[in-house]
Image (spheres, rainbow, N blue to C red):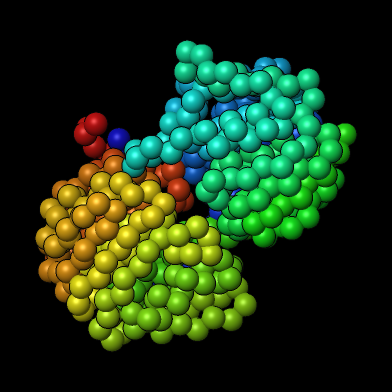
Length: 422
């Protein structure tokens, strides 16, 4: 198991190319099950989650390869089973994305109930209700979702909350269902839009892409497409911008999509960062003292829950007190006790973290508990006095490609070392 050792105090400066979106590609990969063929998804990040999904698809019979250029090749012409076993699904919640394609294409699926980051319950009931509305018979036995349908049929489906995962699974299934499906209160995250665009390129009839009301006219069959381009990772973009802001640095992020990060960019300007945005390039300078600014997470286009921990850490370096409220995952503050070990003053009351700024952070050994918590601890280590050790960075490798190398390119003093800690 690896850990990071960080010597704080270095401002980040330089240019960084944003990787492709982890969350988007995890939705694009199962879409290839809907139309057996050979696909190439460009700009795929080399991440643990991508390899988990690759192994899951390989278990179903697909052939998956990722080359050094970030091109992911998938051949789904040889699917031999419709079961997604616990061995793979336990590692990542996005594994449930194979449910909709298997059910729609083959009429049955057996998918283990998923695992993933440990920050509170995220039930799959909206996925299952969506499949049932489309005519599937669903049962849960021995930890597995069993789904069957001779032919899915279009239906009116309203999501109680705009769940990204449920929207994705319903899009898959409705694309091959008989008749029209009208999905209201759908998630409008860029990752959902990317999937809808890929499905459209495969022959799906989808209206309202990018809005909360999607109309899907099912078709008898979809066709494979040779190439599809993944979108930039908006959470990675936010992470490095916030890291530069915390260290009072200057960073130029290229191949980004600023429109996917409107609320985060607005907040960075509000706290005192200077931003220059031109096309796919975002330049940030952070020279003057930062001012505290409170945020409340919300579904897109609101402030992302995946940036919540990073913003909490940034506010430790700002003047004044701030409140960070998470309306998506109210218990997503498991990283706060580790920040306390570095000297942070943060009080958590229900779903809100109250942060006292101008903290004098000092290096210590801390342990990450989930993907974004890992990133927040690393960012804190970049500004802490002395040496910080971040344990269990395997969480980080799920969503950030070679983070230590990319930070070193920007001037950080950080290294990855192996440890016997488990």
